[in-house]
Each structure stands twice: as structure tokens, then as C-alpha cells.
Image 1: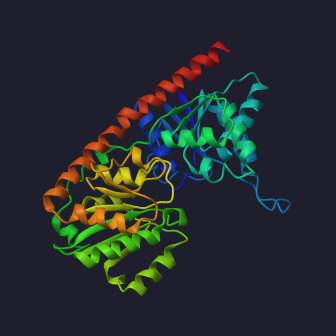
Image 2: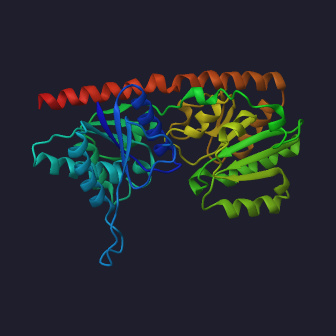
Image 3: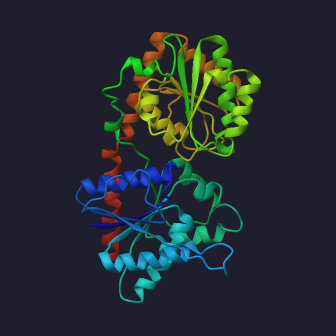
Length: 379
């Protein structure tokens, strides 16, 4: 198949998943075309089966905000015609599904039918999409898609609750390439760069937005380090970073917290981590938790959104109510306080991650593409 993929080319979960999906599809013999305003961060290798097409948005003084949807729709039309793209997979209802539908209608004028598969990732539904200004457009875009998927059952339930959806929604979980989490070649001396032998390594990865409740991360770690030697690895950039750094200074733990920013060595940090903290206000799936689990790192998380579908309470880690610092601390200390128990949780975390191997998930998308194309041929 010749597949077009539209996504946000950023460090966010949806962009990472879309890029990894396209790369794996190319390995399975498909021709993949990424169409977006910037080359996706994980798209390191272009080949005869992987192509990137940049969407240019001309700047005009007339527009206060440049019309990206218009530029994207036009680019989609051009690329479909030029490369004979058979199906379009868009990640995020707004603006991508909306722009894809406009492209589809333009192509129909020329006798070309372009099936659209839309994957819902979370923010497009729970935050942006549910806003009154966008709700009608989101509903329209989902209902006009030829196939719709959601990355968790929780997100599917939210979508059906918030919008008047007539379309069927299939749950296709996010995934990871477990081959990348074998951590071969890492040595104990590399761990020593981050922490002393007797210190537990706690890790958090996010875009440091308020919804991630990063101040709760600091509070839980503060309680942990009072009971045992520990270091906190803080990975990511975002609007809450300065406030978090200030909180660390106020608590007197700045020397125990390492801020990495946008690190390219996440796999190495996770390899040596003992515990992962994810106290988010909401998560449609919890991809960061899954990456930690694939590295054999148990997870202390909130019980919101799709996280309980990934982090299994009492097996791969523990779930707590949003904002329950005391319960998260208790659960963290329970895991870290006994070496045999910690080893068991580490092994369980790795085993649970096997359910989300890309080799199990990507064929589900292939099947959806094939079914969608078959239905469109009948039409």
C-alpha cells in the first residue's frame, strides 16, 4: 500500500507513535509518505519506502494566524496525485482530520477517492476538542472519517461521552519497539555518572505542562529521599520547569535532582532507573510509563484515563488517585524498600510491556487499512 501519514512532528506521544508506525510499515513493504510542517523528530532515516513532504505555510500580513489547515489540505491533494497515495492516516482530529476531509472533497472533484483513517490521541478530544469553539468541527471530522481508532478504551469512552459520534471507533493501543529497550552494552560505571551505588534512581519524563502535575513528582520524591538515599532524573522541557526548579531549591533538594531537558539518552537513563513517577491529571494512554516498563522500571502513577490499561496495580507498579501524594509515597517506598520485591516489580513491568510490542499492534492498523480500502472500492 501507499500510505500517507499526517502528524505533529514533535516529541509528544502522538508524533512519536505516528513516526514509529510509519517506519515499521515501511519495513513491512509499504510505501509511506509523511506530510507535515517539519520532519518528525524520530524520522531519522529516509529511504525509497519512507518519504517526507514539508507543508509550507506562506506568511501574509492579512492573516493574524497563518492558515495551516488550508496549506495542509492543498499539500495533501498535490502529494496524493503525485505519488498515487491510496490511503491517508491522520493523527489528531483537529486540525488534521479536518484538513484531510477538505483534501478528500477536492480530490473527489477530479474522480480520486481518498479514504481517511483518523487516530484520536487524547488532547484533541479531552482538552482542545471538547472546547465549545471546536466541538462541532471535531464531531464533523470524526464522523466524516472512513475509519476511526483511539489509543485506549478510556479515550474511546471519553469521545463517545463528549461528542455525538455516529462512526465506529476501534481501540488500537499505542506501542513501542521492544528491541530498542534491551539496553545491551550499558555498564555499571555509566550508572555511576548519575548516582551513587546506594542511591535509588527515580525518573520522570514529560513536557512539563500543568496537566502532568510535575510538582507532585517533586513532592513524592522529597518524601522518598527522606527515607532512603535517592536521586531524581527529570527529563523534558516545558512551562513548569522554572517553578519546579524553584520548588527544589525551597525544599533543599536541588543537589538530588538532575534536569536533563530534551535528552537523547532516555534509554540509558531508564536502564538504570529503579522507579518511574507519572502522577498526571489525565493521560489518554501513558506512553512514557510504557517506555519505562519496557526498560524494566516499575511505575507509580495516577489512576486516570488510559494509565490503568498500561500500569497494572500491584503488578507493574501502583495506581493512586490524582493528587494523593501520601499514597504514592507509600507505594514507592513499598517497592523500593525491599530488593527482592523491587526485582519482582521490575520483571513484572517488563513482562506487561510485551503486550504492546509494535509487532502485535502494527498489523491491527494494516488490517484497518485493508478493510477501509475494501469498503471504499465497493462504494
